[in-house]
Amino acid sequence: VLPGWNTINQNNKTTDGDGHGTHVSGTIAQQTNDNTGVAGLAHGACILPIKVLDDSGAGTDADIADGIAKAIELGARVINMSLGGPGSSSFEQAGFKEIFDSGVGKSSRSEEFRRKKRISMGNFINLFHL
Image (cartoon, rainbow, N blue to C red):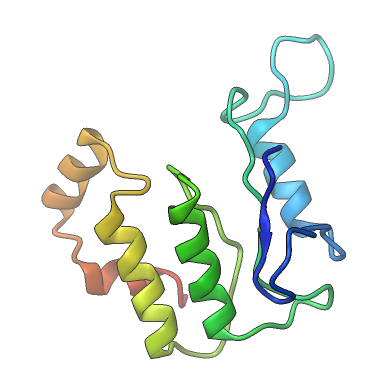
């Protein structure tokens, strides 16, 4: 686990008071081939914790957008967020556009899939509001 950032308190204390982010990160990066438990989806991955919600799960769209920007600034190549809400905002749209424009999570295969399925930036953002 790499040193991360807390956009709520503007510090490096990223303790997950809810536990959901820690659980998801563990599922993604847990050890593999150790004859114990289950295998991680990306067992060689490093975790860069960026806390964008408080321990009750509350936060602002600005905090989320700041977290996206910080993750990109710190070199994240993939961003996973388990978030939901009643709508979208200009902060949120700008954050997702920043992910898309930065190339985070892109590969030649994902670009080929995007072209074949005619997925646009608008569709990408809307996927996060289902």
